[in-house]
Image (cartoon, rainbow, N blue to C red):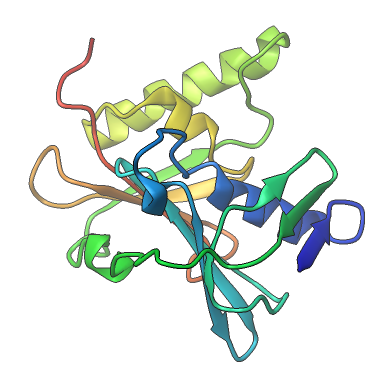
Length: 186
């Protein structure tokens, strides 16, 4: 069992929470409801997808490789035992190869959110509008809101309506998201 407490390591807790948000809640798709862990020399890489987005991060904590359904509370995230009989797909194939050449600027999600604070919601709305203008693409607003509260560099593909890659500006090689656009705005 591995437990990461918010109080001991706020940064790694937030990174793991970021990955957990990309899991699916739908029953019947067990591989979309797990966090896939790959052990590395310097820690662990965590990956999750709900089929419409993929979140990846690296942490210094070493967790046994496998697929987990972590328990998430406001103060801790616990990885109990890997789940047997799940064959997590090759997540690297989801990452577009040609995005690095098409940078569309940044989106600053510090001080944003959805909820009772109208200032946080207004800032998220402004940043989302900026994101749509920069990319020419509409994505699920919740996918943007679920990104950790930091600044992200936006990469697109040359063709319209293809997957977008957002890399955390402070640590682009370790924390990133792949998001599929909505087919049409509602």
